[in-house]
Image (tube, rainbow, N blue to C red; front, side, top):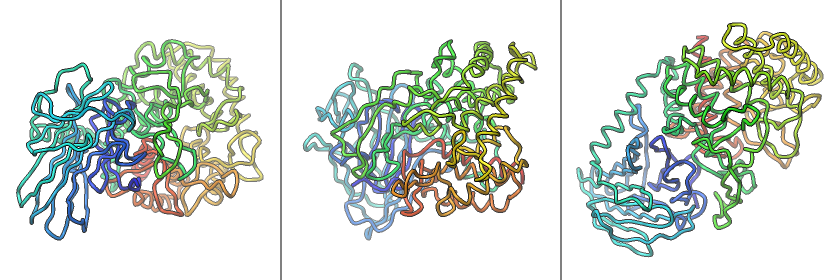
Length: 584
């Protein structure tokens, strides 16, 4: 059985990422990039679906782990009755090939260790050809790729699995480097492990030095920023929502989705977070990714793309994988790419506004895009569409979507008034005023005392907490303050915010962590700072031992759920931390 989701840590090279468990096992890795087929898929199946474990042979008494300061280098200490070893895991920022480096060193005593490498390509389905190969390496070859294991430790092979057993005494060390290459490429060069370690640590520390955020929560915010950087596909600037697929929103149910793609909404939130603390290069890279992905016709804009700008993300199921703790189906691809969601236009407009505010010059094509997007949103804002939670039942006039259409038009008007773009200001302003009036009339339910999920409904939705954050109404407005109070009272479980009201008593919702961070921002905004700080501290305490967050948290079972680590949760953590710091 797979470990708990919270028992995993992330390592990555800004092009792909791996999950490392507290037991020393890498149970998930897609190679060569985030959306490639996994060659370690034990996370969604069993060890026979691929994993790489290095651990003591004796019973482990205690495991402690942490990231090296200001980096994505993971250190895990295993203690047994006979001693202790330090396992260091990292992925050097990629130059030519992608590597996973594992170094095990005995801290004291005498430790018997085991290493087991089971490579299974194509999401755990393809058993490769294995054995010694040129370049003094053990290799596994199958399908489109080959992985090479380099180590000075003697190996033997059983059932296409590389195995080693060895004993370390204090100060002894072994290193293992696993490298991926395409099947038609020659064997990769052996890397200098110590040099790779120094370069990787230097890369992350220099990146962290750019962070301008200062507050008592700086360490937590920095860890989230590092996580967001790790989820950014370096060659294109695209930001994936998570490195995993099909980790369930509810155990045993079918709410299992593939998040290894780039949602415009999440990317827009990420950009504001990064820009606000001094990271401008990522914004410039994302600008180019956006232009490449969208093309020149704003009417064809999707809510989600591949990390290289791919549009076609066909969804299918992998029947040979039983799923995380038997939560079927395992899905790859995402049919939500076919949905039309009005809110993404507002998110994109706000991201472009954030770049301008940070004095980042927009590509001239983006100025044209802003003009055409404003016109387009004016023309479609009365249509029904899908909501931000991507439910697949029916389209509606979602309140948050309409608010974000208002945001898109409002930013267009500001850009036109400043001379940045041209447009029919009279038409845009009339539409803006009309839309504001409609939202206030049909999106706010006076009997409930809250903005609601869709026009003229009674259903609460946590997306209402975003309304004041985008400037639709000020925090001082009684409708905003009433919405905050109502959501606190009726849309929480154990003090944590749910996305929406469950459809039935049997359909139990877990807390969607980003929503609780949105509540922190609202509490700050309405002048309830002590409560905001208490909630923020509680949310920080929900992070796992290395500071990572999932999509959801089950307050009843006290466990992580959903894809992990989740970019949106870490984005919301950063933004809530900024809100607290700005009003301190």
